[in-house]
Each structure stands twice: as C-alpha cells, then as structure tokens.
Image (cartoon, rainbow, N blue to C red; front, side):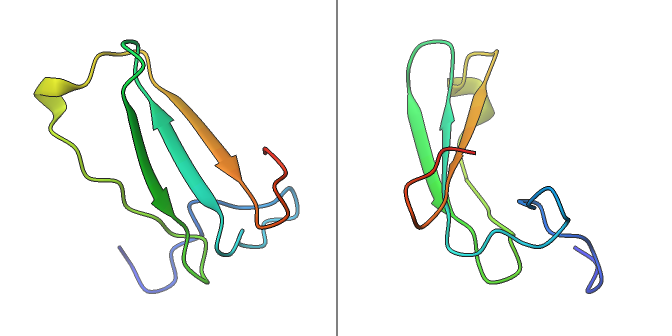
Length: 67
C-alpha cells in the first residue's frame, strides 16, 4: 500500500477509524476478524476457496458503535 494511501476504514469526514474491530461474515456464517490500526488500515487473511460470497463487513468502533 502506498505511504499516502487513504485509510481503509474512514469516518464520514475521511478521518481514520482507529482501533476498531472489523468483522467479515460470509454467506455460510463463517466469521473472520481483524482490527484497524492508527491509520484505519486493516488486514484479514483467509483462504478464498473457503469463503462463500456474498460477504458482509461490519466495523465496530471502540465505543461499541456499529458503523
């Protein structure tokens, strides 16, 4: 990722969402999780052959708000 790339998890004003939980759920209900860093970036690793689309991504901030 480029050093000046925008955050992957951003608030409506474009500021990064720091230390938020990222939850990815596939069509079979399998859940994968990660956490954003101070720049709003996150990485969730999974084997694509094991994931069934469609996917749902949920971001939960430190206060417990689902975004």
